[in-house]
Length: 252
Image (cartoon, rainbow, N blue to C red; front, side, top):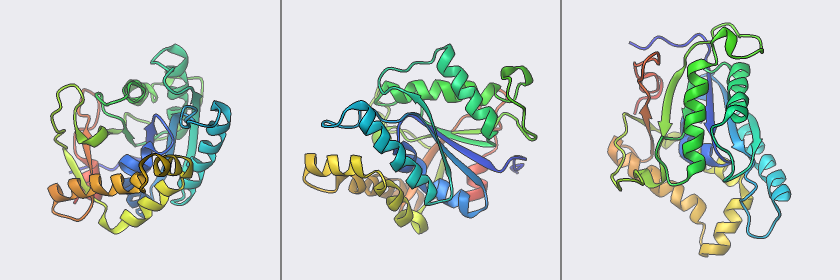
């Protein structure tokens, strides 16, 4: 049986604005409904997310969109202010990640998988694993250590299309979460990212941003026997909790 972490706080630690909404927005909504404190953090502000606007302008817009999406569910948004396609797992960025985790003290972390279509996502995977493992070590940061800080439950969201890009094999989730009841609210969160939605509308001639979200969630829903679901793979390495907290809290 799962032992609930002392800190009922979850952190979605992702690469870019809109990643959390796409990959785990439904789980975040459901956790918020259970009274969990929810934080959404991105390593970058999405400065490469436009074909027409400069990096500072589009980053400013995307920060506002991300904060607006978080507010819809009572969450807090954070940004480490790194640059798209340029950040790596190095000392400076690792320090930013550890201090974010130290300040939030999450009991549950959702982040990118080890293998994904974009190296930004893979670098965030390393940052998340590192910070999750060490943020509660007293000497890991000069910031005060919050009560209840501990190695959190750690889950990886689906890679793009639910497929490992190195093998082309579908990823088999350890955990499926029914998000049918909150699918509309999840789409509302994603729609806050209007700069990305409009760019894809212009490029594809359809509302591909929202449609792609629904297609993927419907595909995962078929695995769970529900209309819409989100899929996760739990990290069960040494020192990390191995019981399936997400299944206990939100099981399909």
